[in-house]
Length: 483
Ligand code: GDG
Image 1 (tube, rainbow, N blue to C red):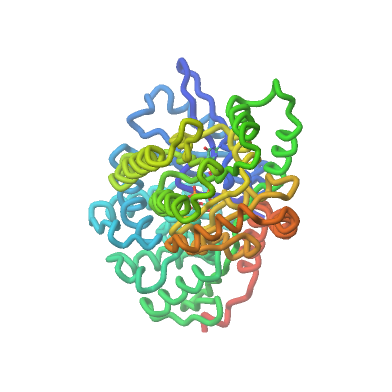
Image 2 (image 1 turned 120 degrees about the vertical axis):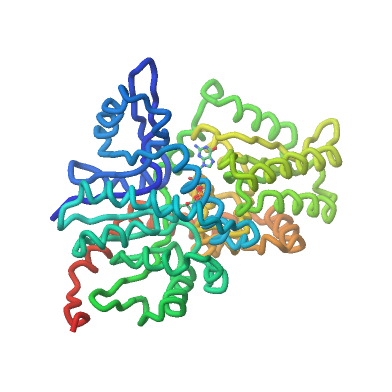
């Protein structure tokens, strides 16, 4: 059996340059953790961008960087600042991201971005081809690299290639507006297996393949002249144990071991024992519906004024893509909204919204999850939404209520939460009211089911299922197709 090559836009390590010395620190994100079972031992390689552009890497340090990355089974693709601008901030985040999240009006169709995307995808494909041998297995991740499977297939027709999309695949009516729609589909069809988070995304993709390329699709197989491609859904899980154990440890912390944030949360809890914390955590991204959530909070306070001074909304908005104009506008909108609503409702002893615009260390994330009575996650569109799953995993006593948008992929597996339409303020206000008054027994019943499911279908299982399905596909005899 050959080696496994994983490809994603970013490598699962962060580079630190200090006094000419290089350290590569492994990332702790969901993808990196999930891939541990696939990316371990000497038989795998992860290819991606290091996070530093060519201009930021002095020539004399380049070999040291390669060495530091090699220690983590990683190899970098070199990208210039202008390539990152066109491929990443341009086509990936100004064309594909908005379009695939149904923000058609934000999607920019610039041929310059498209050219950069093709060029950089070719760079990734070349980096793979340089390292790949026949018999290897390649797993390509996400919307930044949709042309890579075909680019590799052209040079290595027999190699096994899997692709997983972490964001939604939109309906045909949305996807068809993309000027380069056929090229994107053909790029993906270089794979043997194409995976999505949900069955709906899978169906949307198959519908576009049938209607735009006229290919034969039966169930979830696409037949080409010489190959059959399998399309399937693999809902991504979390590292359940990591979150539940961190929460257990956190709950046993003595006063002196608590973080400053936890101490503040405790003080507020003590001063108003009936008060409820609502928690909202997302990257500051328009797809996450943060501004709408804050408007809905205002609506809730007006509809149910009895909760004034009794509830608090904690908003953690993590900075993201801040050089894309839509993200700058959103930042301004959220800043103003929080200011206006706090100005309108605050009293001497109560500030309705606590707003943090930053990324927090993992320990503080656990402080927030474990201290919040209600997690309120209402993206307008979201491929999956792992925060919803993490919140449930940290509720070790099984209390807590999750209010989740129907538009998040995770809603398919989290029916026991309160599912809402993020555009329906009436429904949201009522869900908050229901959540505040939900008997503890009912909270526990719902969370027990959710926890069991999340523990079983964790991120490692997700990665293994995908890999096994890809191996199965490789072993199938499709010789009849070539007749
Ligand atoms: C994309 C898709 C899909 C957040 N704030 C902090 C922090 N986080 C961590 C969370 C969670 C992750 O970031 C966010 O994951 P999500 O799934 O919620 O969202 P995206 O970043 O948009 O991810 C999404 C995902 O890919 C996987 O396929 O679910 O739909 O859009 O793990 O814990 N972590 C720390 N500090 C923070 O302030 N340490």
